[in-house]
Length: 223
Image 1 (cartoon, rainbow, N blue to C red):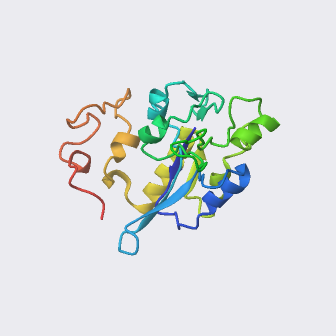
Image 2 (cartoon, one colour):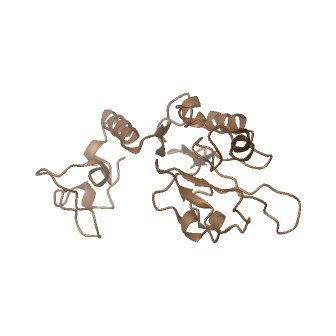
Image 3 (tube, rainbow, N blue to C red):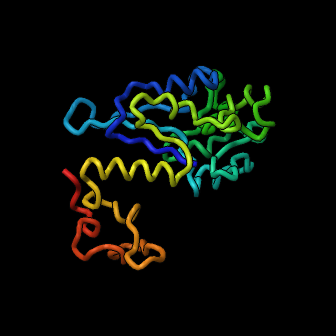
C-alpha cells in the first residue's frame, strides 16, 4: 500500500490536510499531512502533498530503539504509542518529516509520536474506541481508502495498492506525452524485450535501455 502525489494535478487546496485533521481528530499542532509548494510564484511552480510514504525500507523503523514502529502485511508503516518513549529518533531519520510530536509546553519533552497511519489505525483491535483515541479512524478495516486520497478533488493524491496506483500514474504520463522521454521512465515502468527482470543496478547504462537515449543521460530532462 502506497501513496503517490501527481504534482501536475495538485492545486494546493489543502483539502487532504483538512480531511485528515477532521477524520482523525488529531491534537493541536500535529498535521499528519501537509502540502508543500516548490518554486512558489515563479514559472515551474508545483505543489505536492506529503505525509508518511510507508516506505518499504523505512528509516524510522530502523532507528527506533523500542521497536514501536512496524510493518503490516499490506506494507503499511504503523506504530505503537504504548511502546513509544518520545526520543525523536524517527523524526530525525524520516526524509518526509512524517513523525509528529505534540507540544506539551515542557522543555525537551516530546510526548508520544504521532504519524500518518494510512487510515489503518494501530495495534489495538480494529475499529475499537481505544484505537480511535490513539490513532484515529481505521478506514482500511472498513474497506475504504484513506480519507486524504478520497477527498482529493483533482485526484492528484492516490492511495492504495502499489501496482494499481503505478498503473494509473503511468497512463497519465503517457497521455501527457512524456512517456519514455521522461527521465527514469524505463527504470520505473519499462519492461525487458525478452522477459525476465529489469537490470537496474549501479550507475552504468541499464540493460533495458537504448545506448545514448534520455535514460542514460541525467542531463536531459523534459521541458
